[in-house]
Image (cartoon, rainbow over all chains, first blue to last red; front, side, top):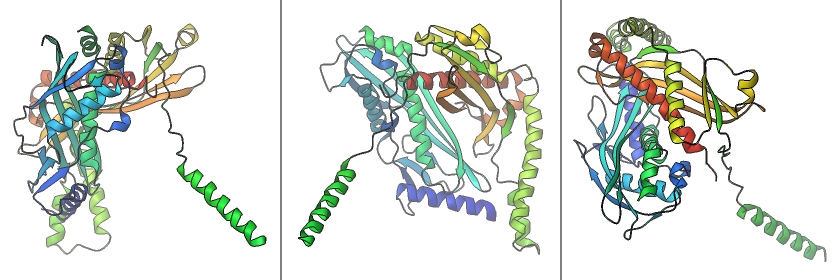
Length: 199
Length: 239
């Protein structure tokens, strides 16, 4: 490995280790979450308030053991909480911020999710790194009374960012942003909104 | 008497200060713009097609030379960085010409603007959306509640994964601002970086022009949809 690239790679490792608090472990743990500060009432609030259940969030990823790995040294990147929990919490925040009640039972609407991708790619250049976060979810709106599936669609969010290789929070931030974009697309989808109000 | 007055003053100061500390500053509320229902969408600005690599080469090679040669000193690193950038720029020019052949008729701004307008129309929350090629004047300007200025500073291919071979994706960087024409006030702005979900070797893009064209069109449309989605998401903010 070249001197320049070694420095960039070392800086990247330090940054990620600081962000994850993992020290020199073989894994880097990121505290990915849907940033609540940016959650708005969107089109999803234009239908009458519903009692919403967040159904099972199923992990359909090919590799559920990690969300990425660092180039060359193969260090594994993981989330501190299970990806399914992160997605479930994100959906609950989005739905409740839009004026609906998230309840464990007696639901008008059930929202189910399948996680198809939750991945971070890092490309290390000479003095900086490029981070690309990618989240793909299949979301379904189900009638809570009879189980009829009202609507299903795939939502994909990506976030790409260049930063110094030692920028410690960038990896988490791109994953947060990719997740947020996925949720924003859902909350502004007229067909998803119509399904929420149709039951 | 004097000491009592000082004590009272001190108590008042402490109470006053603690009052200041406990009073949280008002949270900034985003400006809602739900009442802006007639939009003029204008696409403008420079657009650059790029094949971006973020590659450590050829700096790696320079560093290897440095290890074995008699070079060194404080001046070497900046010179090597400059040379690295220069050579990568030339390499990117070469790759760009390989990939961009046959894409000359794609108008990135127009594609993004069309997808943006189409997504907003489908939302049913706007009474009128006109897509224009220049700033509205006269009646066009008067009939718009707001002007959306769109730009696509960069689009092309970007290396997203180091592997053998490296993998690239189509990308588009777009931005939008929502301006009230009567006041010139910008009420919303957003920059979106969209990276396509497909990752393929660069050779696939250079060998299959039709596919490359399709991927680039899709990522540009996606950029327009994303900007529209974020505008819809933000329009009720703070309410």
